[in-house]
Amino acid sequence: MCGTPESDCREADARTVVRLLMPAPHGPLAGVEVRRPGPSGPHWDGSRVALVSGAGGAKEDFLPLMHRLVEAGHRLFAVDLCGQNETPGPDDPAAYGIDAQATDLAVAMTAVCARKPVHLVGHGAGALVAATAVLQARSRERFAPSTYGSLTLVAPCWDAPLTAGDVASADWEPLVARQHRGGTLTDERRALIRQRLARSHPMSMEHLAAAAAAPDLVAALRADGIRMLVVGGAEDPLVPVDRTRELARHLGARHSVVPGAGHLPHHDNPDALAAALTAFWAEDEVRSSRPPAAHQAAAT
Image 1 (cartoon, rainbow, N blue to C red):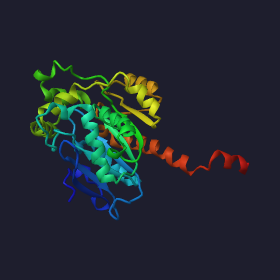
Image 2: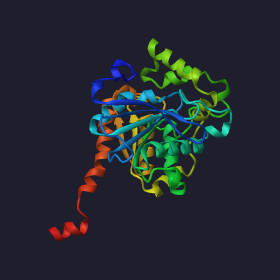
Image 3: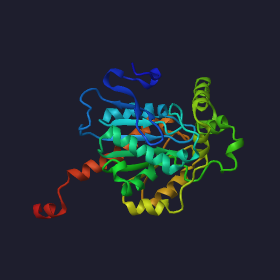
Image 4: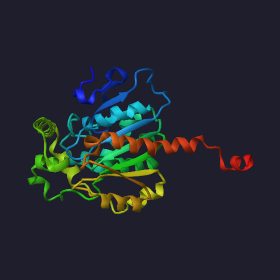
């Protein structure tokens, strides 16, 4: 039993869905893993992917995407950050800063991935958490996987949707509704969002909604040298495509546009996003299969 809506459980007999609690400094993170049945211990040698949502999001939003990516042989992990959805959170504001969230993510991924390389995918403010985790890995190796294979920023909220002074009076449901294509929610989706907001810690939503990239984040990511992809939804009213394209240019990253998608490409068009991610990650496999340049020269 996969515990997800029927539309997200296609061919459920060909995959395994596991609910997780992953250790982290500010308390265990609730997560979900999707993988093919079979051996899955810490020494499993396949590709691992970690997915992180932002303000108003949750790990379940990634399930349609995860069910598609697992068909390509990946092992997928999605998490609720501290105080988000099913992960409880303390009353300490320090637990909800981007640096603290990034450390939580790194520790959790170290625990479940046994320090194997991980492709990071962050959405909205979760893109800032994922990006910060990449930079932390250089100075906190014991808290991070041995390497991050790549970094993908999906509809990244590089600038905060709200300022810190606005969050106290914010009505979160309309803000989350704006993330959906056309700004409308079905009754079922509205009930889900209300449930999600009700069990989230207010500080989690406030900090993620007011989060903004540090001035030196772009330069630091470029200096790190990690391969990056920036993804925009073709109909995203919050992070328009021209902004994702410009960010990709500054980062020296690949850029991809998901057609028929608003601010939630993984919800609106998971097939197109899965294709973009699979193609991006496959470039590493092509590179690793090529002989060194010296050997190529000798062969010719």
